[in-house]
Image (cartoon, rainbow, N blue to C red; front, side):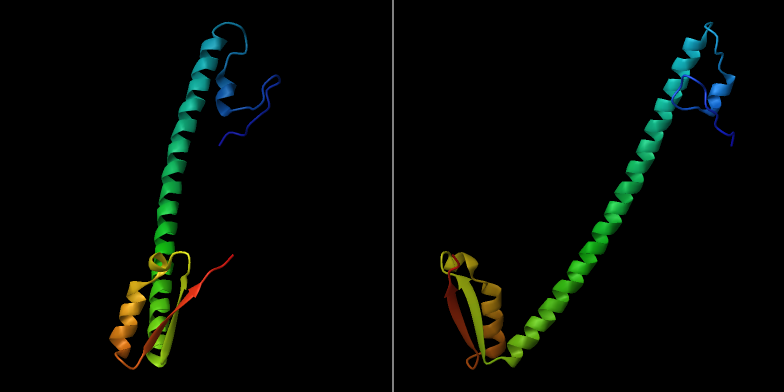
Length: 128
């Protein structure tokens, strides 16, 4: 690569500057083409960055989903062990919305596993 050099009066130097005519004749057209080239390169780099960022986000999202899925399975296995080992299961529900805060799946699982010997007690709780 060509080393960059500082051109007085410009913020940054670019290898393409070496071929530019610094005199007044035709320099403005070359400057326009140079700026257009910079804009096109920036657009290409931006699109490449967006593609890489989208791939990374998708990979991270699938990784999170795998962790969540594993956590759900672990929680469900532990839930099954606790219910099977218990004689009484307490389900704490919100006193302001008892019907909306009940978990029918938990209640059905306790009835299925325990039959008549397991007790399910609903505890109403109101937090202020």
